[in-house]
Structure formats: structure tokens, C-alpha cells
Length: 302
Image 1: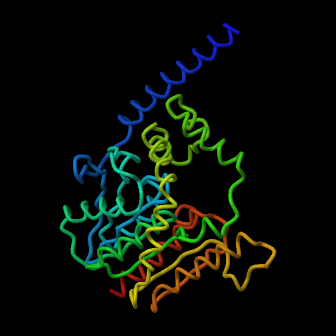
Image 2 (image 1 turned 90 degrees about the vertical axis):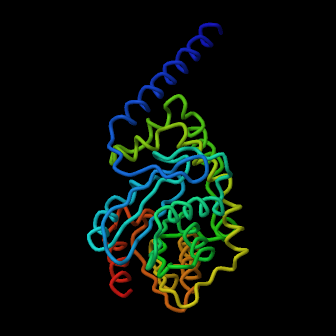
Image 3 (image 1 turned 120 degrees about the vertical axis):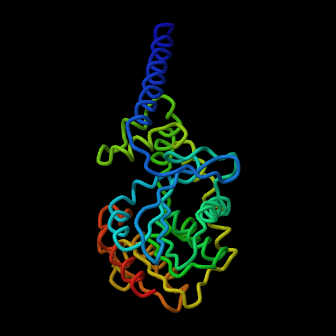
């Protein structure tokens, strides 16, 4: 028993040293061409590229940093100004002492944009949880917001309507995140994007992701209370799979998701819904051209 206990302690110690050293190396290995902007005692990492009469602002899905937009942002910056950022506690941004619900996150983004002294027209682009944030932003600070692009956005009714993740899978995944101080996330994160892996491997990033998940129901409830509708603002909804009318009724999960996305599209009298016809949730990573074309079409119309 003593040998087993000692072995566990040694393994944990090795994991802790491995994680601490790797995080230090990662932080020093990647260029940070952006800037840190104070939003009230802590700072967010922001990249500002491109130029044009339109500014396009991106917000990522839960637990994602700005690097997930690289393929899209690089192309969009050829015809527009582009602002990407890491939410507090994620990527290169500093940790926030505040709750990680959408209301707080939107206020932090607003502080960034005030510092940038942005004027319109602005296109907000959000993926998944970022779609919730961008909807809330447009409702809370409508000045200069000219259009919305929502990429497989979360919907405030999804927790009640969508089939839930297997209990064991859910908690095994969370255990991996809780074990971040010992380097566990580094073992299952993809090497496809080294910068993304480096940023997501930090203990701060993993624990902030858990906090965002903890407050996710509250974020959805807050959006629901606002009864989101955007009048005749141009709204493009980009969703995975196919329209509800094309889905076999036995594929319950896909059908519910398509209905939720169609409900989001109904929040503007000037909306377009595009179905990717692929199963990927991260459409901006797997089919960036779909998102780029939607943004460019909007930018040229403003």
C-alpha cells in the first residue's frame, strides 16, 4: 500500500512539473502580435488586423481561444478590419474574478471596444456559446451594430430540448479538465493547431472553461429573458447538417438542432439561414469558406 501511495505521489509530482514547464515553454514560444487591454483590473488579449469601412468582431465557442478563427480572420482581414480576442481566463488573457456568464463577458467585450473607440458599421460573429454572447451584445449595445453572423450558435432552449451527454462521458471529460495541473489535457488535445493546443493546455484555460460551463445555463436564461429579436438587422445563421424539412424524423438530435437554428433565424425579418450539410459543429474550422463568404456578402452590402 505504501509503495502504491508513493507511486501515485511521484506520478502527480512528475505531471505537475511537466505541466508547469510546458506551460512556461508554450508562453515563450508563440508570438503575441496583439495587445493587452484592461477591462477593470485585469486585461484581455486582443488582436486587431486588416482595414476597411466595416469592422468584424469574433467571439469563440466555449473553451475556445481566438486562434480557432485563424482561417476565417486571415481572409476577412483582406476586406475588413478584424478584431479577435481571448475571453478572460482563456488563451493569453488574464483571469477574471467575476462570474463567467454571458452578461459579464459582454460587458468585458464592450470595455475592449470602447477602448478601441470603434464606430460602425460593425458585424458581430459568434460560434456556439459565442453566438449567445454576440446576440446579447447586439441587444445590449445596439449602436453601430450593423449585422450578425451566428455559426451553429447555442440556443437558450437547448438544455431542455437536446438529448443530454452520457453521464459517464460527461464526468470523464470534466475529470480530464480538473486534472489540468498535472498535464492531462495535453494528452488528449489535438496537435493540428500547436498554438491552440498550447493555449488550451494551461490550467487557467481549463478551469475557466469549467466555469463557463458552470454558468452556461445562467447565460442561456439571461438571453431568454431578453426575448431576442433584431428587427430588420441583417442576420445570417450558419448551421450544421440540413434543414429540418430534409431530416428523417428518426434522427431526433439533428431534427431538434435544425429547429433551434431555424428559430434563431426567425429573430430578424432580414435573415438568411445556411446549412453546411456536414456534421461538424466547428464550421469555421472545417468549412471556413462558408463563413468567409457570408461575412463578405454582408460587408459589401453595408
